[in-house]
Image 1 (cartoon, rainbow, N blue to C red):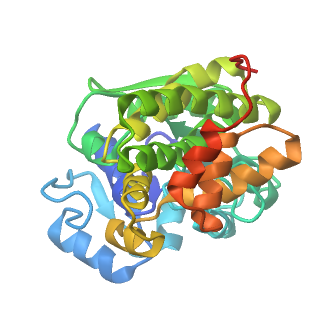
Image 2: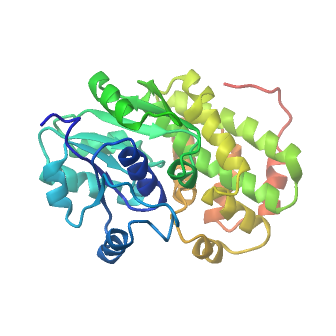
Length: 337
């Protein structure tokens, strides 16, 4: 059986992993979906929907719930990770333990390695000396809209042309358009930093600052993404595309974004713990704010918006004081370098 004919394993049964599994299976491909909570997986198998995250959307017949990850890996060559960045290394280690030689790894996780701030492809390189084909999926996507079949476009960045073609064939359909790239670093950085900036946009809206402020944050936030991304080896044009500007606009302007919702709550005076509990899903921007700020310091890059988000989240700075700090910065010419 060829890799394209074998099932594709999706690891992570949250909203995004489930949506990708529904998309792939709806396209006629055999899909295995595995998550780390056995009780949840039993419920998914019984109800044939993910009622917690995507209620009312029935699984296609080609979507199979996999109770055992080792057995699922034995049946799959291609793996798509949709687990949070905090669990990413453990997931990769499990994959390599059971499928060390010929696996191809894709991921839709948007974040950096916790504690080290490295792009996730570098983490995979640590664990996989065989250097397998890699692909990262990113762009302006809300899980519920993908699962419902609403028009969507994404970027798939890979280091392997054959894998790019195979993954594109599996994902692409009349409503889900795939653009390919070779800029893995740029796509990863765009997806990670936009979560931090979405928290900033949410804070501003929660404080009642309006559309002018939001537009300024999106525009200057894009500059911050580009500065960091280029310094880490990404290509400037990547950040003007779906995985950069597209994803940034989406998460800064729509309340389906968990990161934006957290910012809204903080701007309205709610505490981080309470707001996070009410959102009840991983909010990648909280951890990313720490990693992005550390990376900016290490590379001597100015990222004032991301830095103020970090201070609000991790140093207890008042959101109004953070905005005042941004507005009180020294006057300068607008630049995009």
